[in-house]
Length: 110
Length: 128
Figure 1 (tube, chains in turn purple, red):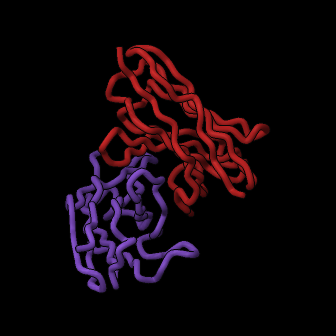
Figure 2: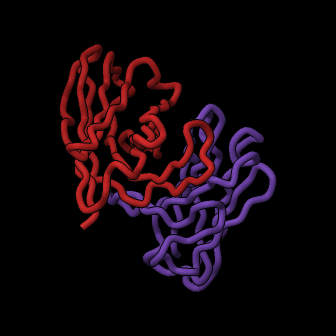
């Protein structure tokens, strides 16, 4: 199972919106709605911010939103804030009862 | 407090074995699946495998990269999950995290709530 493809980096100014793509195949992202997103600050443990494509766990700001079209899922961060600077990983359920993570995207707040 | 604490990491020679532990507290461990995720130095997250809860047969699944070398077990009476790693290779060097999941289903999940609680990680270094 190959890793899902994400852009290596995206950047934006405070207050702007950025979108991170996560491209898989018809056997993972395209087949299942079990797509999740995780935020990881440097030296910290990953944190779940989106599950089931577009649902937010309790306590996660509504500035984070998810969507999916075909084999590509997306995470949008609206109203970018300095604390949003982190690495972001998508994840999807895949064939044969396995999961796969994305390659990761570094978000820089300019 | 809901918590997962990993232990057992260390320096090990290629070809040797190591067992990691993940001790849970603050919640009913037996109701949850447990996943293991690793992160090599400076690299991204890699899913290693998971074990379903007892209600779904404690069936474990593995990534292709570790299948037939790694085994995930659980002891609900002690609220501990284990990752038994055999035939370790230098590519297995990473921080290993355990996570709490809700995975309902013996095969494909009919409900899945992913990785909402993570341990702090334990470092495994495979080197001669």
